[in-house]
Image 1 (tube, rainbow, N blue to C red):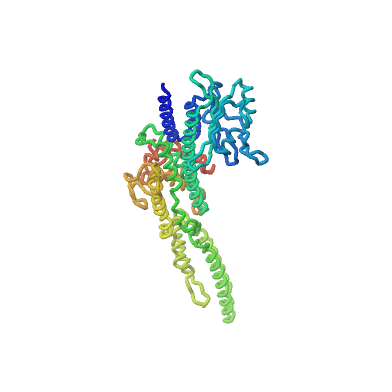
Image 2: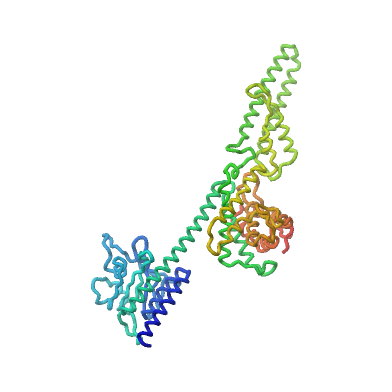
Length: 540
């Protein structure tokens, strides 16, 4: 091959290497590719790649010596046993004695014909390595790697260029130019990969920050935004494993799973706009404070007023010579005080909220509301206000229908927030997945009333993850955490009611996803024996 032909071949190789470097996504393989490509371009026997650390040292990343069979660092699994090279000495002076450090500090390429005769550099470590291995380190080419901003991020060092016959020769000017070009391309590729990884890590941290802020906002749903992604990914993995059934041909690859995971982390991000007074409403009478305290004061006042009435009645009886009726007045008063105490205990109990308030309890609240109490002007008023009666007769939970509507609005806010973001390819379905976890297959969910045909499988998967986590969560103020068997029974009923996807539900049971999740996140007392055959609607 002519010299011109060889040069053309080297340039073609350099272009091909540049394309390959840009396409490589794995950081360690990228580092290895840089060293191996430089060795191949220059026919060098050995190559080392250092990275510049924040504490001003050069850390060994890759070491390769073909003739000695040395392969350390990168994907080899063989750690490099050498300490980083300092750019500055202990006295603060620049370390110009080590050639790699010199190249960084002076931003220049160092091309040495023979290390043993080079002046100004300390090659004692090299000589010791040679003495130990029988190697002869001769020609060195050390090139700093600068990114697009002119920052030196690493050093590429090649050792012992060889002729075709195998004789060690100095690195030629053309080889130096090729390696300098390669180092520049490699630095840009590395920086781009680091920027991409940095942005991905920042995005991940931001997602977790939002989820953590929502969980911290409400002590009663703390952990929900962390547990739902775990459960969603468990179910997604089980679906991928399915070898039979309607979903056997459905499969989510790594990028699609990542898209689902991010959606799961963000599925409740709209709660950041939900008032704390509603997210944290632990009792029916809670506003800024729990108004049950006001009722307790009224009961105390009513007792005092009852005692005043008793005293007046006793005084009137004595004046009128009806002393024989005093005992009856005392008995009636004692009965009334016992009734008030019982009523207070009742209101304290129903104020906590429950999954279902009996109609007779609601009627009792309305009856208590009609008790008469004297205000500060001496006028009689009803014991409970209309708003207090409205809240105390909430049939399920602690929220009124109006308050529940405000809380449910969080899913609309979630969708609006997520749809406003400029997603890169591979994440564009995050709003769909995150925004569908309150929909139902029968079209009676919210906020959009979507049907099964309008909901993707990942969105339906999110529904099951969100519901099961809520059923088994032990941090809700108005309900006791369900056991496994209770939660699965409720889910089975939801399957029969066309609330959740039946095929996903069957996989959830068959693959024991519920049990894997329970062992990690449920209290031991919740993990009871489950008779899968007794679960409503389950088709093994």
